[in-house]
Amino acid sequence: MRYLRTREAHSDSYCLELFRRAVQLGNEGAWAFIYTFYSTEEFLGDHYLLKWVRSWMHGRHGALIRAAYTEEEFVQEVWLRFMHSDAGKAFTFDTMAHLMAFLRRLVNNFALDLTRRRAPEVVEASTEGEAANLEQVIRRVPDSAEDLEEHLTRQESLETLLSAVWIDIVATEHEWIVFQDHFLEGLPPREVYRLHPMTFAPNEVEITRTRLARRMRKTPFLLNHYVRLIVLDDDEKLTTVFQHSILEGASDEWLLANFSGLFHSQADLIQAKTLVLRSIQSRPALLQLISL
Image (cartoon, rainbow, N blue to C red):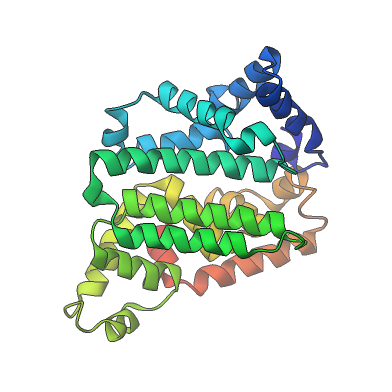
């Protein structure tokens, strides 16, 4: 908690040991602590199981999931899958980032399985192929790479974003093309139309872009992930500045006091703010999504 709130130095070993005792030894005290802090209101952080579950259950197709499982049942099913998984039993996680990425995958896979069974037309082959391609990218990363943890975490986050966008934002193949070309690649509508003249009618790309932007504005959880991953390239400093300084209007003094581990000086903070503003200006789509 100290690390997440103030970015002070921390060690993964203590949390990993709690998880190991819970999964491998069946220690009731360890399980109680983990369940409370990772899947209840007690500590609802940005990257914890209950928040991921809610992002699915309250999305555009959340009714399909809620018809089969309550929030508590969904959470319990994910924990059971973790406990009975080969990865959980072997418990070879080196960092909490790896462990949480695995939990996130369990949540996403379970939600997608439910959606496929109840509405097969929602998830089509093209989306499954996209997810498979991302999995191959993850597997190709060498184990010896120094930035393995960062790469895995970002790829898992990207997979989560794309899966959730397909379920909660995109309704047709045409909309998926616009989301990929415009919102992911940053191409202007006229360029998207030039690349797909047989797919779209004149002005259809612009209309589709506006429709997708409206849906994303109504889904703050996905919008936040889109900005962090795509616009700010998953950079912790830039994301912190965007969230607290740009959106919330926090002062430089407040940022330096609360995130001293990220910003070591006023000049460091100003540099980060400059990079954020450049990122925003380089992506006109972002201006349509947020009110600055």
